[in-house]
Image (tube, rainbow, N blue to C red; front, top):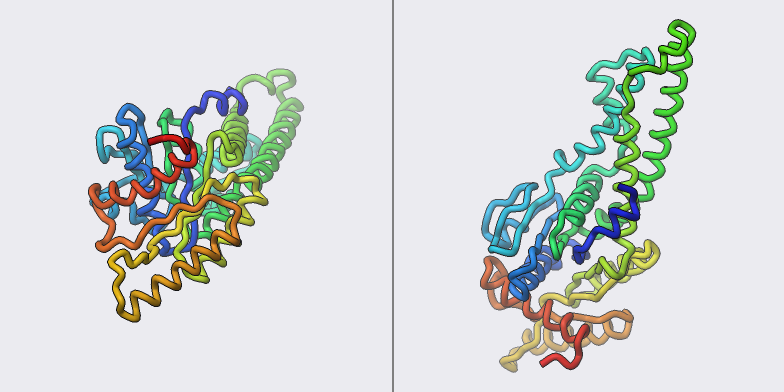
Length: 333
């Protein structure tokens, strides 16, 4: 299957939550996924944490692994396992080593390990995240929600498809040169029989290269993917959001909206100095966000209790999904 065929068969909607560390990306991603599953129980929704410091399981109050497990009948959750996420990239190195050995170059297991750690396949946690985006975005779920790592990790993740595309291209060319050299050497001794049998691991590298290309296209497709940036109504969070939105725009990744989390609204009209001050400051910050960004904004009030468990996440999800539905259908009741 070529890259365009695989992309055309993909039918999931992909939502990525990103932003500064500590602004509530995980709870927002979990709440959004739960709201999607509650909206349509016939649709299968998956939420995946690609943040190395996992807390998605804590949000749902259950243990999670790298394989999806059921949270409700229609909602599934997983946390990226960096080691298993890099298995595909380990196979690329093994394919190259197999070619080297076939050419008569002796490499032992220690050589293989050094080759894998040498930087040929970059990215660490981001590589694992990319693999999981590829794996689960094409796995037949109706909705896939990703809780991404803090901004720095996310920016490296966005660069990774380009970097890996070039790296895998070089790896493929190295492999082809080694194959040609080995066959030419064998032909001196064996003649035409040198081209019989042997190992051909070209599929490993080319398949992975196509897979990376599919992810690159998915991340840039506004019909498929939306990126939601979470921030709090504080100056540092606003500044980091500005950098992230600019970088996403440069990478042609569609930003759907901003989610301003933990907004103090003083609904009880408390007259104490602290409540009055916080309400005024957050109102001013919301005004600044509206003026600075040409994006839709969802406002999530500061919750009275810690957002943990299905009931609390369901309450939070109302703010995240209702404003999105209002934008999609202004006339809905």
